[in-house]
Length: 306
Image (cartoon, rainbow, N blue to C red; front, side):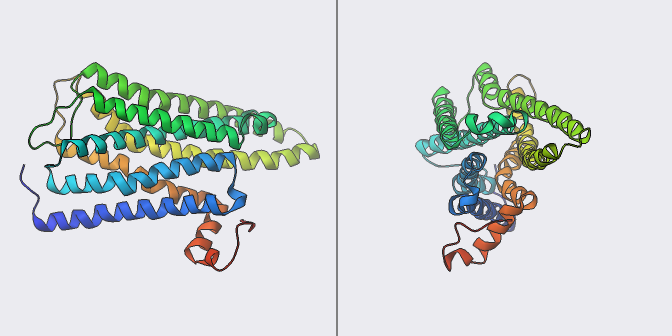
């Protein structure tokens, strides 16, 4: 393949570099907010923190590799670096979807079983979820690395698993099955929320009005996190559909198309912080305090966020 013209390469570096910087800075804001402000120390936010760490690593580790490949179109790097790059790429993608699965379980108990929520989901349970999530993600990444290498002198990718059934099964268990589980859980949450809304409208009890306020907050949080999940699936589904069904057909998807779909998926890591800032008033308040440098002027960790 011919190397892209110099001007095109420079423009690509600027654009893709900006995506990487925005991804890192946005997720650093989310991580700093949750770690610093005690009001944000909740099980749900711990899971969001884990998701933000995944997205931060995508911006700091994966995007620079992908940016270099997008400009050179051909990698002349050591095989061990290829293995590390692919393993980390797969691990972080799976970590993101497993984090979203854990968040959907958290939202299920918060909306569908609010009286049992605090006993079922707490800081310890969230910690166990995060530990299992990262462990499974690492195993998937290492497993895909071991499955096989098909690397020439100058390849479009570091290496490719050549067994079609292995590709299909790996993608099914790592992406499609968790996606189906998440969609099922959020559908259940939606139906329960609708039923709760109708119940609230049909009662004049003051205690129910108070409970309605809490339920409304939980539903808003659930709606926001469902949007995060939806954006993730929209960004990554085209790429996974591409890499899953291509080995089963005689049609070869052009390299630029596959590469573009991969970048669309990676861009999801940049979008999430903007979603939090747009829908969560307390995250907006935390972001403002961090960006203005106010947190460096004293101890504001106990501040009451909006």
